Length: 439
Ligand code: ASP
Image 1: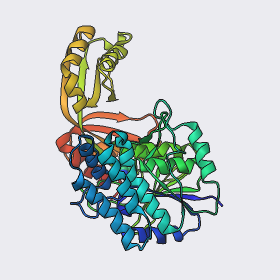
Image 2: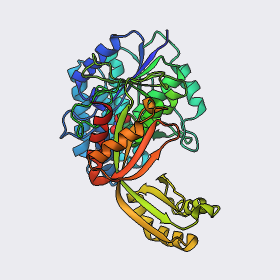
Image 3: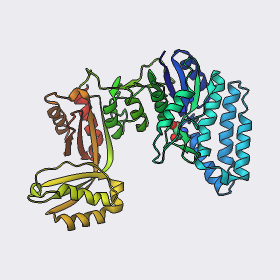
Image 4: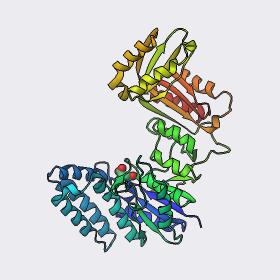
C-alpha cells in the first residue's frame, strides 16, 4: 500500500482542540502513515507564533538578559496542550533542561537548535497523542556543503520509515549540517520536510494541511468570492506563487514534482473540503486561466539606443552591469532599439546610481531612465496554450477598465502572460482580468 505524507502547519497544532482534529483526520484514512508537524502557531491574531517566541528567547539569552517573558509563554503553551490532551508526557522536564542550559551555558545553544525545539516538542507530543513512533529529523535529513539536501538523506529517510504499517510522526523545519549541528530551513520550511519525505518514500500523495481550503483563482481581498482552484500544475504554481498567490513554501514543489507526487492543500478545520491539488500538467482544463495574481514593488530600467539590434553583445553587457552589482532581474522584454529590464525596487535602490552610471558609460545609450512603482500581474493557465484570442481578451479587458499596460511578456510556453502596470492599477487590473476569463 502506498502511503500518504500529511504535514500539519502551525495553526493546525495551535492547541489541544487542533490536535484532536488531526487525530480524526489521520485515523480517517489508513494510508495516512507519516505525519509531519510545525511548531504551534497563533490561536488568535494577537498571539505570537512559537517559533518567533523561540527567536526572541535566543536573542535575550545569548546576551545574558532575562528571557523569562517569551520563555514562559512557550512553556505554558506546551504544558497546556499536554494537560488538555491528558498526556503523561515529560515535556516539563525537557523544557526545564533546556532552560537550565540557556541560563548556565547559553553559548552551547545555537539559534537553529533552540528554534528547532518548536517542531521537536510539537512532534513529541503528537507522537504520544497518536500512539505513533517519533522519528527525529536530525539524523536523517542532512544538508550538503551548499545547503542542499544530501542524496544520502533520501536513503536514510526510506530506511527510518520502512515499516508500511506503522504510524510515524516527525518534526518539520530542520535537519543537520556537515558539522553535525542542527540546521533549520528558511521560515515555513516544515513544508519542505514533508515534500522530502514524500519523495523518499515514493508517497501516493503529499497532503499539506493548513487553515485554508486550498488556493483561490484570485486574491479574495481584491476579487469578491473568487472560485477555488481544484487543480494547478507544478509549473503553474511556480508562476502564481512568484506573483504572490502562495500557500506553500516554494521549495516544496521540486521534491514532489521529481516523482510526480500530487500535493493536496487541505484545511484542518474543514476536512470535508477537497482543497487544491498541485500535480503534473493536465490534459484538459476547466477554465482558460487557472489564476491571476499580482506583485508590487518593481522598477523598470528603460534603455534606448538607435541601431541597438545591430550591436552584438549589447544585452549581455547591460546584464553584466547588473550582475556585477549583484542585482538579479525579473523580466527583460526588448524591442529593436530599446530594452527594458524589470528589477526589484528595493534591491535596485541600493545600487541605482552606480548601475545608471556604468550602463551610460559602457553602452552610450541615447536615453536611459528608471520607472519605479511597477506591478507585475501574472495571468496563468495551461488553458491558454494554443488558444487564439486570449491576449486580445486580456488587453481588451484592461483597456476597458482604463489600465495602462507598461510591459507585456508572454512566456514561450504560453502558460503565462505577464503585464506590468502602475502599482496603483494593480487591483483594477486583477479584477478586470478575472472578470474577463472567469465570470
Ligand atoms: N515553525 C517554522 C516557522 O514558523 C517552520 C514552519 O512552520 O514551517 O517558520
